[in-house]
Length: 343
Image (cartoon, rainbow, N blue to C red; front, side, top):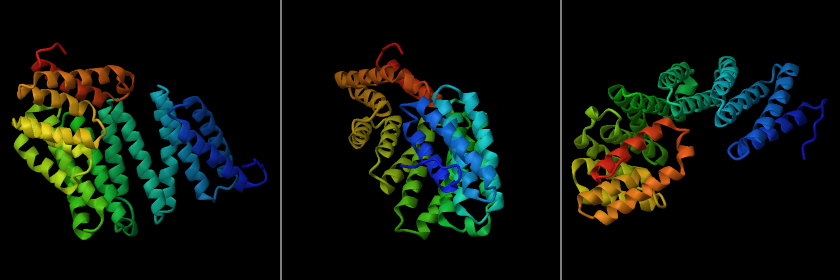
């Protein structure tokens, strides 16, 4: 058991770390306890930073407390307070990479906090701010010194930053720019996969890149950008590179549906359901439509009703992610129209 000792910084730091991880692990189910623990950890680390300003790890943990407290505040419905808390965390991370540019750990921590901010803004549908956060992160990461930039992990993370920008631009109905960002990510991942052919992680991310493009060509909010013929090529390549995750099979199923190959769509979507332990609405709405096209009316109604039931049961959870709600609502409307039902 860690005991507080005002004269021993090691004990104080251990206590703060214990409080931090407690707050981290209970933040979903017990947000009030998480907030209390993180604020206490913050107070301890803030005092350590004051007492020992030359110890960078105290500053790092202080910033981490603020960043994770922001996530707790967001989950509690206090989005503006969460953004303000992120605003207090960023200068500390940025100062650490400025003071210790050769420390890879600080670069990764700064990048991680940008990702968490992007997630929060994207879930709230604040696309302009999310785009700015993506571009700011890319700009800062590209300032890393040569010894950091030469590390394969840096290249992987740089690709992930382009990928995240693509996600934001897609939701903001700017598909052409989204495609450009996705292709920039894929170019980096393809280079890594070629240089390190035994590293599965690079191949998996390259598969994700193909999957992203297939989704863009078939589920983009801007239907004018749909191109099922192109989507087939990318969806098949994604499954070829990484056949185990259900998400790639789901995309392939949607792509086949868009091309009018109903039986192939059912096969791919059933594979997605199998791999994803029952699947979700992304499978079920398209299974309903594919079966309806095949004149399997009872099967179609079964999947459609299952999707509606799930959406109704999880409406509170869905309401926290505006892009997801918008996309599922589009699929629901499409399915209900086909099955001659009201949305």
